[in-house]
Image 1: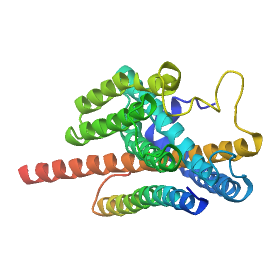
Image 2: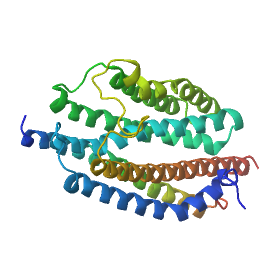
Image 3: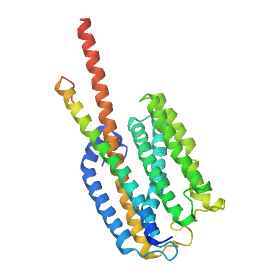
Image 4: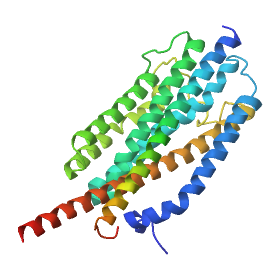
Length: 249
Length: 50
């Protein structure tokens, strides 16, 4: 039986994702479709927030995925630093822009939720600031990858920066407990169970599952692109070297 | 603030999300097609099996 490490081979990964991607894409479409329908047509208005609560169904999954992408990058960074695995390097590189996108969506939708509820688009409270730091970390890691190309040194520097930035994830999670924040405390994953009514909770979980399937789909697609790009670069180098040899003879 | 004003924030939030995620999907798919074409061109011009 093939182990996880066997699929770390780029050729096997391409074959596996070739079969898995259509299923993942269909799952993401169905889950997001059901979740969006429920968010707009089945969920009742909140007794305090009214209709605005519907922003939660994109804001919260985007926040979770913004952090999940960073966990994926951290795992891949360990693969880079410990095993120096090329697929781990590619996974780290391709997860960063996706994490940045979901973090950006979380910040923008949070702002648009904050204005009608808090009366302001932004406050420098611990949750919002630590999430902005996460976005800046993503931008920094992307900048490193772009300036240092695909060199092993660039991969190691980005991996180390990712590991250092990991400290921001627990700060984001516990910021609402450690400091007084305008942002509400945890209401889904908390000791004592969720404080959200079941009629509002299940569409949120469906949206979160759909967004996770979308993230995996996009990450696998981006990873396949990165593998292709590296194959093209290798073939081009070999073609140039063969041309030089022929010219020398 | 009335519900009409709330809906403008809701629609803007969903609009931004769909635009950003849609742009990412479009970019990845377009890049995939470009890379496949480039790879086929290289293989046609004498590269090895990939």
